[in-house]
Amino acid sequence: MQDQLIIFDTTMRDGEQSPGASMTREEKVRIGKQLERLRVDVIEAGFAAASAGDFEAIRAVAEAVKESTVCSLARANETDIRRAGEAVAPAARRRIHTFIATSPIHMKLKLRMSEEQVLEAAVRAVRLARQFTDDVEFSAEDAVRSEVDFLCRVFEATIAAGATTINVPDTVGYSVPERWGALFRELLGRVPNADKAVWSTHCHNDLGMAVANSLAAVMNGARQVECTINGLGERAGNASLEEIVMAVKTRSDVFSCRTAIDATQIVPTSKLVSTITGYPVQPNKAVVGANAFAHESGIHQDGVLKHRETYEIMRAEDVGWGANRLTLGKLSGRNAFKTRLAELGVTLASEEALNAAFTRFKELADKKREIFDEDLQALVSDESVTPEQERFKLVSLVAHSETGEQPFARVVISDAGHELRSEARGAGPVDASFQAIEEVVHSGTELLLYSVNNITTGTDSQGEVTVRLTKDGRVVNGMGADTDIVVASAKAYLSALNKMGISSARMNPQYGEETAAP
Ligand code: KIV
Ligand code: ZN
Image (cartoon, rainbow, N blue to C red; front, top):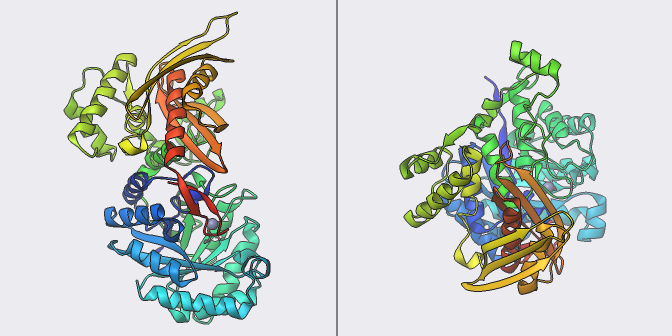
């Protein structure tokens, strides 16, 4: 019998701490349900004390998710823990994850607390959390730079106080696999009640070793890995869920544990998270990158055609790439459309939403001969947007570019139902259309990032555009898809403006400062 490796997904908490990756309540519910389909064991849905919006979003995930455990982060103080307890209360399985920093640098300069004060706060926090649930996780923030003797004392005391999971974070992404594995070996050997808790690893990717470090911890006794879809997360990100899961599965000769993950849901989950957060997946990203299973060189292609295992250690369809196939066409009916969406795990909220999506599907089918699953997913990607969240909508766009002429765009947008018209010239048709929008919106935002990816292959593919805007220190991402990339760009720009409008201040749990969030 192999041990179970618990997969703890923190895409909606640590992942959400990436600039502009904040998610609305509806988006979190959608991701939560998809994570459940992926059979993630624990979903960290957010930090309840960050803002009213975060609290509501965690509660909504707790109501929607039935199988996975739903968790909220809480600093080691009474207010945070009570808030987290209330937020996860509706969940069938709930966890409170409380943390405090244990490294000398954090205790002295950030917390201004002594070792004894930190230890006491940790124990108090765990005891209080146990009043809300039997499933309590304790994390020693910046464990990587903490004194091992002190870590042992804190972990022994928090386990005695009722912590059922002990999480050891490499908060700053500083460790290397050999050292990280050795730390787990030492902690498990030295903490007297170590066998009373599940040991967990949480690694950041600043030196590109988050996955390697996490796996080293697993080899040395960790039985929970904290990770995110697409490796999303603060700075260089967190350990990537798909890489951890596929490493453990593919190298079962090396790892004496297994996960409950349904790997065929990996690619759909990756796409959903990318669409919602506006963080594209790099093409050469392991497992979920568009080129992860593409063989370019003649020698490789020849080998794979003769025998797939010459160059492939995993099968594309086993991680969900099988979905990349022709599904529907121009003549497909409403029922076939609805059925395929259901197979992709998408249930639209109402008959009207289904009808509207079906109309968009027909429009797309008129422009594009073959409709793939990815097209359908892009088509319904803004389905969770409520009317209040969609102040600006694109009504029409004319863009003109000609060699020797300055490109020009004319746009009509709807601003909460009122039509606004304008035109502008720019460096290219995309630039001209953004300038035309700004002529009437005067958002005062600054463009941080503009990127285009094709959703499927071929020149008739839909282009998926990401636009990242900033204003007053807040950062938001917007996405848009269309077979016409100028239209996709205008949609993405308006989607970012809409997000900017609904963002409100929230607190980052680790810095205690205000940042932007839904
Ligand atoms: O990186 C970190 O230390 C964290 C903790 C809150 C677990 O995210
Ligand atoms: Zn973290």
